[in-house]
Image (tube, rainbow, N blue to C red; front, side):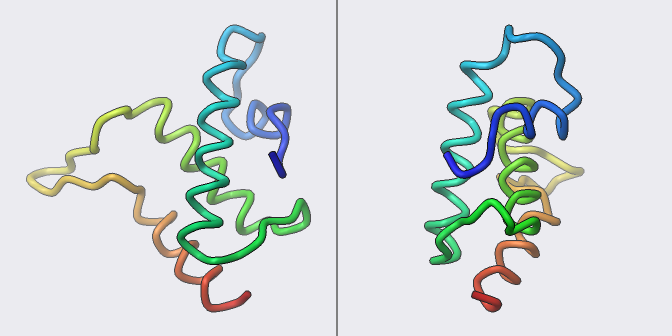
Length: 91
């Protein structure tokens, strides 16, 4: 993993270690998703990528199914889609 569970726990305001295994899986998957979607090799100093990974990881933990807003279903938060598009163009 490029980013740490400690950073993710701070971002998500999670205390304790009860969710560490789930957070590790979600963060690893989020990093793979962001790298695969954008074609970018992630690095610790990439704050935009870090936010995308943390947002995805916490979103997936809180919403294991697609999110329904009104009558529209979405698998990704809108902000994350925008960040992924920007990362793909920048790097």
